[in-house]
Length: 168
Ligand code: HEC
Image (cartoon, rainbow, N blue to C red; front, side, top):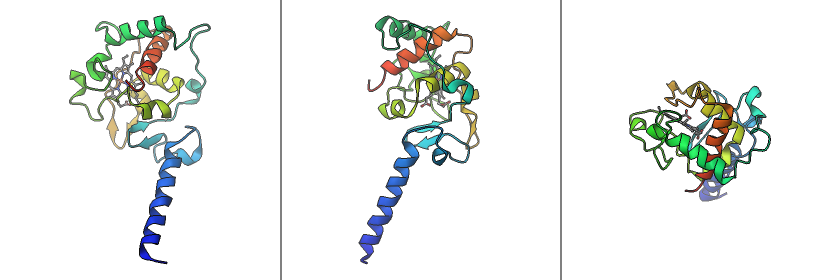
């Protein structure tokens, strides 16, 4: 076998491993890293705990509904309530003034790759529990504040807004 065949086979093998680690179901054991959750090029997404995994919006609430998204947008920017803009920025790209000095940096909530890898229940859980949901990953504690004093309905409105940012 020529050396370049060996090299390209090794590259292919690791590429498919990476694909497996990034794809699909959070609960699959093969996706679990050292500290649980998924790490890939666009950040670290912890596994959704059992008591949040099956969370659904209140009966009759459609996360794609324009009014629901508009309410979420209002909370996202409202300095007295969600105040997500302070870290995530008005665009949701993670460029808010308070986010600048954080390590890890606020996630880019417009990144389609993030949307592909997380469920609505994941986003709900992260907003409700903030950095407690991120835990201590690689010795780092996230500055994610979330919206602990929001009602579940308000948090779902934020989920709807965050989802609407996909690809923006
Ligand atoms: C004080 C800064 C700060 C505030 C305020 C804040 N966040 Fe975050 N947020 C972060 C940081 C830092 C991260 C990245 C690390 C992590 O996932 O915990 C993050 C991560 C997230 C994630 C997970 C992204 C992913 O890829 O896993 C979501 C969703 C999110 N924030 C939504 C919100 C919403 C909605 C609000 C408003 C209620 C908010 N954040 C308020 C700092 C903040």
